[in-house]
Image 1 (cartoon, rainbow, N blue to C red):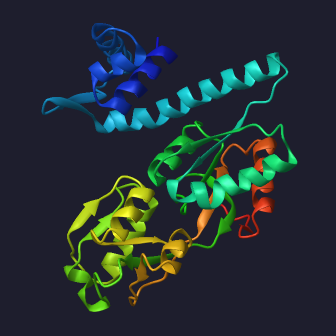
Image 2: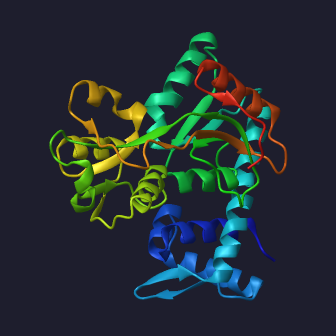
Length: 296
């Protein structure tokens, strides 16, 4: 019989892409993880993982199972938290997942204003790139997502949007509009919202520049200010650097790129009204938000 324990082990193996790392994370032996995966394979009747060089990878069937297993494990964790909250007459914190680009400029100020009015406000914040945020929302690992436009293949509901203008910036004198093709472009990793914006701008300009990946927004900003290359950032994130002449905007035919931020909840099973109310409070706390009832 298929068990939740098997699914939990499978999700960790799929996350780590390694039986040994999965065993370390689960604090069990490697043979125990291998035995659980073998039992899961026998129960389902298909291979979920396969050898990939010296590592492992998910098969097509494994990727399908991973999507459902994530949701089931996420629902289990959510059920446990809600049950404990009821038992102890407590309120489970609202979980917010967001892109790093929005933490200091949007999420933290909004939550700070809410906390001033409601000292008992219970929330937690998870930070990841855009793909990680959508995965967490689909898998019930978070209640609210705030990042770029959600994928059309998922049944999410956008409650509000916030304007976002992306611009190409560089250290003063380091490059000019006609030489962007010869410049090194500093970009976030695949899956990040800023990476998708940068890729869109590069494609719109028909360029094929050298790309260097930078692992965080703060590091990206610092590297551009140091003159290591040009990059794409939200205008709101570079205002101080522009005022102090640490950066200049490099004008192009396709910028500023307008790509609003989206405040999103799950829509297929109807969002918990406490979650919707919390999201509404975040909107009221920041006048830049614009309400919408569109389904994504």
